[in-house]
Image 1 (cartoon, rainbow, N blue to C red):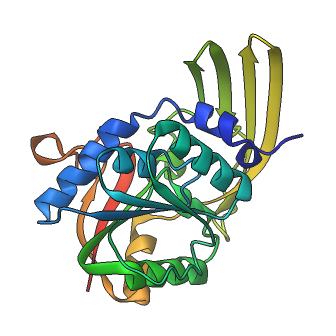
Image 2 (cartoon, rainbow, N blue to C red):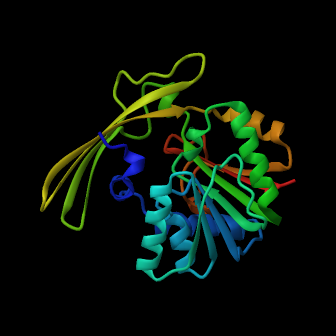
Amino acid sequence: MSGIYDDPWAYALACSFRDVSAEVDALLDWCAENRLKPDSVLELAAGPAEHAREFARRGVAATALDLNPAMCAHASREAARDGVDVTVVEDDMTRFDLGRRFDLVVTMLDSTSHLMTLDAFVAHLRRVAAHLSPGGLYIVEMSHPRDRLTDEPTVSTGWQVERGGVRATVRWGEPGDVLDPVTQIADDHVTMTITGPDGTRVLRDVVPYRFWTATELDAVIRLAGDLNVVARYGDFGAGEHAVALTDPAAWRMITILRGA
């Protein structure tokens, strides 16, 4: 058995349905709406650092941080392959101390679900606040609460992707992967079947997932201090394309924070 996070190439393939370029467009549009033109960005729990690499392509000095050494090595290789300069740091999103500040910090793809406790989330936000430049923003993308609190989730737990002649079927979560009502943690069973010129292989993993509600997030922000909510959206879109968190079409919970 091979864990999904220990196989960065497979993880990147599983997430290749995302339009990273369009998402970075939205991130920069939100910055502009808040009178910020970032010269530097820090992507936390970055995994393959897809967003950090896209920022670097646009001339923003990019740093990517992840705890997994395999992900960090992959991110460095891919940045070199892309011909972009990304500083990759292996560190914990609750304890990092990089000795500098950034105009923009982002955490994407619901990576805050790896923060299993209230104390961990508070520590994370305090580290973010300590690394934000004056006037800087923190943008965090989380799953929409509808996905775990209703019988009508906004995203599917199964999907297919194809890239470079390789096809993959991904199942992230099974019907029996229910939240513990006390801890709000579920053990999500992940199965990824990859078929390419060299045959078929299957990755299986169990990924602990901590679900956070919107009101819990607000409480964590107040407990951490030094950060204020300036906007919240339900999708990647700015201006006339903005989607409210309460809109039926919303499928993510995206919060924009500014240093207090």
